[in-house]
Length: 357
Ligand SMILES: NC(=O)c1ccc[n+]([C@@H]2O[C@H](COP(=O)([O-])OP(=O)(O)OC[C@H]3O[C@@H](n4cnc5c(N)ncnc54)[C@H](OP(=O)(O)O)[C@@H]3O)[C@@H](O)[C@H]2O)c1
Image (cartoon, rainbow, N blue to C red; front, side, top):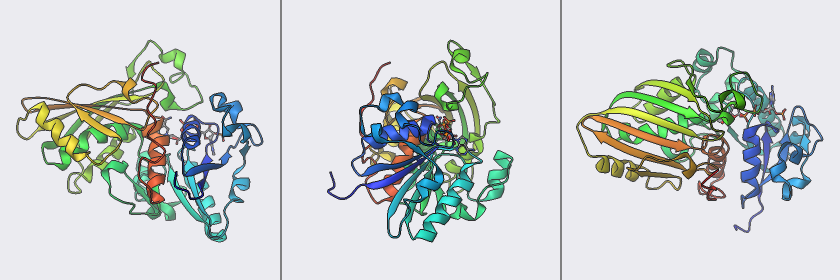
């Protein structure tokens, strides 16, 4: 499409769900190409053994490699993208090692972290939420964390993709806070599919345990709640709004459905409020706003978000849907990588979803 050589990408967290989505999306990207898929457990194994749905594509030629092997692609003057789909806690040290190697080689590495390790600007804020020391505090200032739609440009060299719940909720709340239409008080309930828990099953996250079931968990105590406050502060002149968040585990595999309640400073119609939010997202290729409540099947498999607005008196209810693995992780990460490389946000990310399952 561009006529220029494609930029190589290293994907970390090789066999995980988010890494699999990174690979699926990268296979259709006109300007990025998979260089290495790093795995701690399957070195030398065919990538298609972990992701059989990628067989019959360029993925047929890919094998998992170690981090050491991937670092050999960092050469002087070479631009390399990195998508980190590794667990929080482990990621910071891995990225520190990778960036140290890139600096030593004179390579131009551009990282997007999909874990939680670079979502806070300082180590103490991270440690207060994750209850463990940060693995690379000196690197924190090199990362910006934001939903791409809520920040112009690229203030830092690398980016951190916010969490999937945070993405769904802040997409819904941000325009109304930024326009000063609502009080600084946000209640959000969101339901996630089972893929949000990653590939390794546990008694509470394993799909057979949750299929046909539904429950709230960590009400008012989930790790994404402080992240939402921090990111929504940018819409409130730097002052953190009071966010109360209740996550739910839902009986489906992919997607997040968020319901966000706010209090209007003055009554307005649903149509007027939807028009205000639509105007806020007018330049975003991925976010669409209306007065009809959105369905998960409108966005699953895509990097899109759909937002539905309803108001009565001073009550505003905004529903928002995203795919947790795409807009909430791999797709949002590639959107950030596009931007870090100076390209349009939507390059390689326009493919529609299947629409039903
Ligand atoms: N699932 C979602 O909806 C979602 C949404 C937003 C953000 N995220 C974040 O994205 C990251 C990946 O999530 P996921 O759902 O893909 O998890 P996952 O399915 O558990 O995959 C993570 C992968 O990381 C590798 N890994 C595990 N421990 C490691 C360690 N100590 N050091 C290096 N690599 C290690 C493993 O791959 P190998 O065995 O091949 O090394 C594992 O398969 C997490 O940080 C998660 O919080 C996930």
